[in-house]
Length: 202
Image (tube, rainbow, N blue to C red; front, side):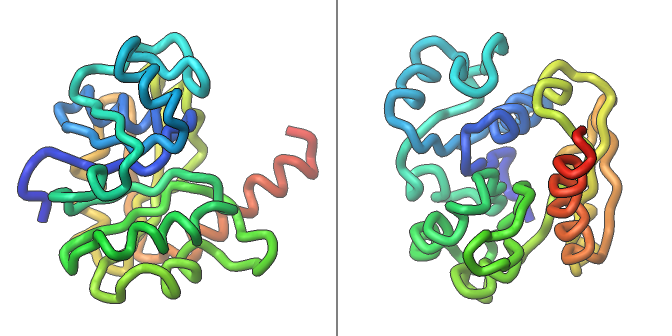
């Protein structure tokens, strides 16, 4: 399904940058979409995201860009790592550049506040139905994954082929990947985790 070792990551926050760093260490070329022009230039020049994940050198395999089209083109796998509040607008902008072989993976946690929609509900209205959908979630922290500390995530899709593909891509000696055929349940768990953490003061 992934014809070449190149992946798109939409969002250069702490988690998007950490995933980019993790995958680049495994040999993948990363097209990293960065919203802020100044940050995109900074990453190009200094090879560091001082705004969201300071202290980590970003390999040349990571190519930052502010163009969604350039980030997406020629890549089958697209990992979406932006705040839930912005997912609807960003996926609408992405839609014209998507192809039938695209796998769009949600790696964000949360619920759209004004509609109470989960991300896969948003995708149903904004992403072409010919694309495949998956969820990537788990009890992870960006700095720990970036440092290579032992961590674990779940790759969830209704297609076992896709969840196993994600497992094969993300798995490393420090990141254990479990699979699930229940992307809705995994997404709900990830969204509620944030609510429970705030409620309990964690």
